[in-house]
Picture 1: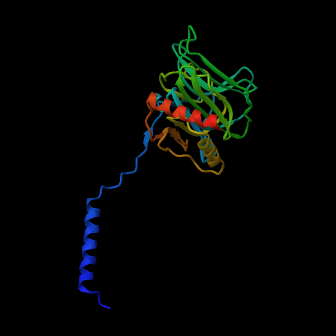
Picture 2: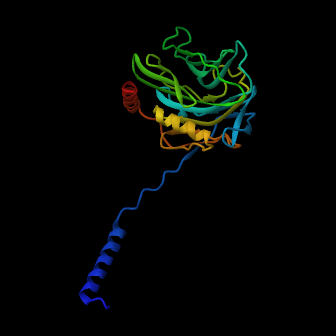
Picture 3: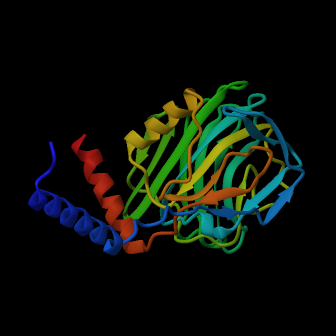
Length: 278
């Protein structure tokens, strides 16, 4: 049946109106492109089979450091898969993440002695120990298998802070009276101690390293752990200051900028409220 003329005119007018609207509508925002983060120091790097694809093989001679912009001690999250070739000998420390020099300030996270205590320590002044923080968590990391660690922290106010350690998606310690420091000072060391460059690294491997600009909530940590179990790699999302997959390269990706202290405080307070409610 032939369309009446008045209906044909209306249809044509509607089509022209839609076309004009499409032409004047703002274009959708372009997808944000991740920026490449290159190490400032990369010595004797090697790669081995990892939790997903390849991993960074850590040995006594490996030295890997990233720009200080990939982390702030005021708040954030570090996630990484760790593989120990053997149990840590008595009297030895293993450094996962470190920053600074012995004087005036330093911080590190890692393991200690055959009991494999997890350590998080920071010090602003080597002489008078001002702003000194030491968290020792008895936990035995098994050798010859992959273990997922996540450290979450936020300095909210003097005497009010949050430090959480997750192992395989579950929180094993929460502290509300410790601070990891005020600000970074120099490159971020991965797998060795920046305070004493000659300190040997541990023997093992690191994979799927991601450093975020805010304290991630428990559900995200669990989801990231479960993703790794299923063989799914992480990504550089809008909280990521550094994501290094270590697929034959130590170059990483970033998709965020460090947050202001005010914004970090807000996020820390929200997370604290959620933890209290649980």
